[in-house]
Length: 506
Image 1 (spheres, rainbow, N blue to C red):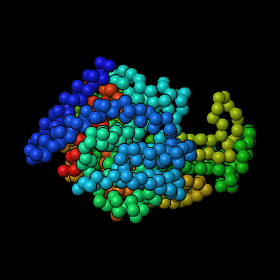
Image 2: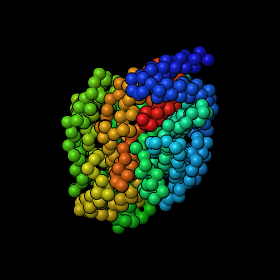
Image 3: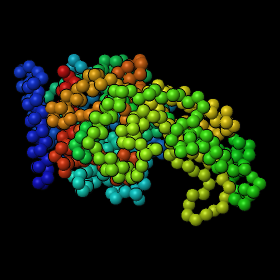
């Protein structure tokens, strides 16, 4: 089809620029070898396009949802199958006290080893909210974006991960040698706060394999709709928990839902929870007031400079429109709002549940109320200290009966900009005539701490060209054929991983 040919020509042109630029960076013999390898692999990527996209569609059709205990074993089995098919020689499913994970190694006899972090679990979904069935992974036209694959997990994270696996298939299909050895750790609990990631990574055999790596990265789709690319140096930590107020634990209020008329003489666990929640933050809800809560370090001048460079030229009105907001906190200017985003911890209410929530009224006095909470952490804060402070605060304020039920979480993660893992990303992007901007840390979270903290103390980050959006939301998508020449489609994303692996091999 015409659009496919156009995408191939655009992609071929960008590849030619990247290959030509290699001549500035290596000896003539090495340059010729890499040029030849990339060109042959690129042809193989195009040849395998349909099979690669079908592999992604099949993966999306099998949702592994940790929060619903859905397909946890099946998800691990499928991840192991994908790893074996991509060329990993040693593949093991590792059991934990929660969901199983996958550990795999690919020994190419190379001088350098690179670690990979995958997640194969996805968020819950309601098909009624989607314009396309979330498990059918249909290819649909999205205005202004191009042809996209729409489905749960399309961009978070199966799309980029499938593109990385497609890169391995293409390298092998082209008869070329893998430039680096690989160590893969894949988990099925990321969407519930990775409560057992330590039981995977801290095993002696996994530690030994990762200790040889120059760093660990997670495949991603890092391009904005305008083609811009941000290289993130870390991520906030997170704690996911529930606060539960009940008549049983409190010793007051009903042991079961009763008629609301009895509120005149019976205490309410729902109000109990609301009053407890109100002590956690300032009146406007924007400043944490938990007694003894870990204190965030001030934002550095270097981080402020990164933010300033990253947002230069961005249209604040468009950004607000994308988020559906009219104001930042305290009506801050955009620079200061983003400084808060990067540097400040948060206590957020994800959801409140108590009593009857269906149509109409039911006039009950609920016996239990639950608040689903996430707390984002920044460097200098630990999950254990944050949870301990929360429990102590509630007890001190007279709410010891409010149960704190932690489901998962981990500390923040940071990597230096001069780490080889990061510098290799920048080199690949610059060769492709992209202008990457550094970002101090993602406001979202992933368990990179398990790699960046001792004993491994490795660099960790995300990489991958291409674009997608809608993570955790309806109509999640990942671009297959881009309408914007500056944004790579699926084959271009695959080649970005091929280029990155070759750069890491230097």
